[in-house]
Image 1 (cartoon, protein in one colour):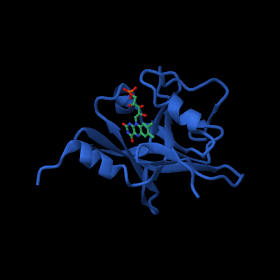
Image 2 (cartoon, rainbow, N blue to C red):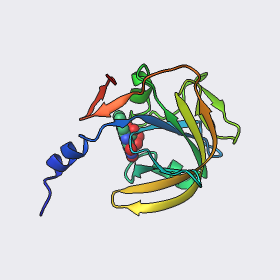
Image 3 (spheres, rainbow, N blue to C red):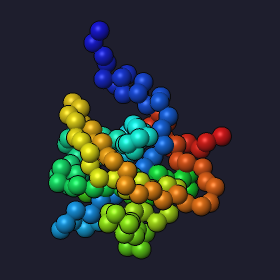
Image 4 (cartoon, rainbow, N blue to C red):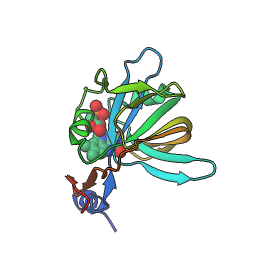
Length: 159
Ligand SMILES: Cc1cc2nc3c(=O)[nH]c(=O)nc-3n(C[C@H](O)[C@H](O)[C@H](O)COP(=O)(O)O)c2cc1C
């Protein structure tokens, strides 16, 4: 069967996801963030997660050299943060919105939860590279909040 690319893309979009910002600060790079919804949990023991990056992304080079990153899960009142770090060429983290996590990687202060990871593996995934992270530290925001949901190309509220 040959897949119609647009129909395939639309069908994949029917899988509702959360939204995260992947942050990193390799040496010589301004603290950096990129919005993704490809985040998934992989393993509890060892603690592994994954996300994938498009090979033609401007961010690709940064993550090729990085050895750690953080996954920052966004809440439903953080759509502006998602939009900000999804803009082409605008990936510098905004002053005052991030802190240095205990593993040394930058973390968004107001994320619902953040996972500080070292890169465990990179796997080729067609036009993406799958990055597997080993979680070294975790921060959970104390307040009860709802996640930002992405479905069918739009942000949604959890009802
Ligand atoms: C909700 C949402 C989810 C996204 N998920 C991914 C993703 O999982 N992987 C990826 O490479 N890009 C993803 N993107 C696109 C990047 O955030 C980024 O905007 C885009 O790559 C901008 O171009 P640049 O990376 O060349 O600067 C997503 C964008 C949005 C708005």
